[in-house]
Image (cartoon, rainbow, N blue to C red; front, side, top):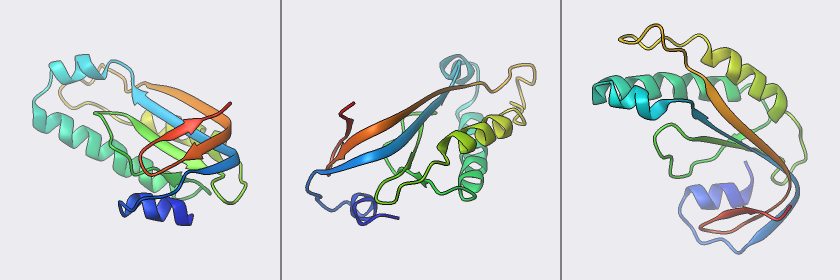
Length: 135
């Protein structure tokens, strides 16, 4: 884990820093608002806990880092290439897709868990409050 990542996680102020060859993965669950509207809060908490636990277990097999950012509902973010060039996000993405297909919503078993995914590679600038792509 990079020193910048550690500082951000611990809530410390960090001077803006540029990373030339980083990749960031973003995903959310397609139809999450509809699933939430038709579910008890406890079901949603349990579902997200199940998904995020499986995702975290999965990403530990790759040279990537789960970003500890404010998550809103079902959003998930992973970075790669901060400090040390690496390129495992695409392979990790395929694994997360495979893992997500195994989930079943207990009270909505016919509703599949589908991920909407975005991956961006290029130059990133990170400071204590925001992460921005410059490409």
